[in-house]
Amino acid sequence: LMENLNEKYDALSDAAADLGFPKYHLYNYRKKGDNKIDTAILSKIYEAELIEEEDIKAFQDDKGSSSTPYKGEFPIDYSPKWHFVYCLCIGDGHVRNKSTEQFDWFQKEKGTKQVVEVIRSLGFEYNPEYESARHGITIPQLIPKTAKKALGINEHSKDEIFRKSREAGENYQIALLTAFFIDEAGISTGKDSSSEITVHQEGNLELLEKYGELLDEFDVKWNKNKKREGWTIRITSEGVHKLEEIFEKSEDLGIGLLHRQEAFNQKAE
Image (tube, rainbow, N blue to C red; front, side, top):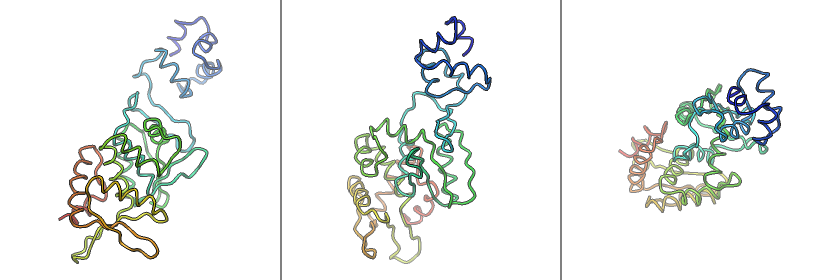
């Protein structure tokens, strides 16, 4: 980078003025010698063709503890797999820090590790340190940021995500349907004929209703199962077989049911 800058400009101050950012960014970059630079500045340098893509070792988002190096390709193709990870935060996930919108996701250890593998497959150098499922994992900030940019969501909205997924296309709806199922489904695999699959959302029946509407769009048969003062979604036998078809499509997208697959297969049989 410094070679290219020196070749094109007489001084670093001239380069900064031409590219439109304070000159101290380049002076600090040259002084520190650790090849790290602010990502917003890096973007301008890249757009000016002063650095090649293969020379960027990692992209690191600037949000403290949720910052995770990204070594994938730019521009990012917001695929259904990206959407799947984003949608995981709708169920068992939550925004811990409102100022940074840090997404945390909670699941049993096996599930957590498999989700980490999906995140790594997107191009992230992600090596979380967690002692138990109770601590969960932090979803890299670049994932919700990219989702919001691609879908046109200004704020993390559980209400908007169903409409935006529909607008994005069927594969994105499948990603949402699969993610929500992984988070919120209860699968009984007992031999008793009354064993069933239910989907619940504690304290948010409006969100559950939207998921029911999504199931309707895919012709998955279900009914309301009373639960104290509320209700859960009960998937009928016919609905289970329809879900089996959908989850096969989900596997083709590089997603699948992950740690829930074995239990679901038993139920489908």
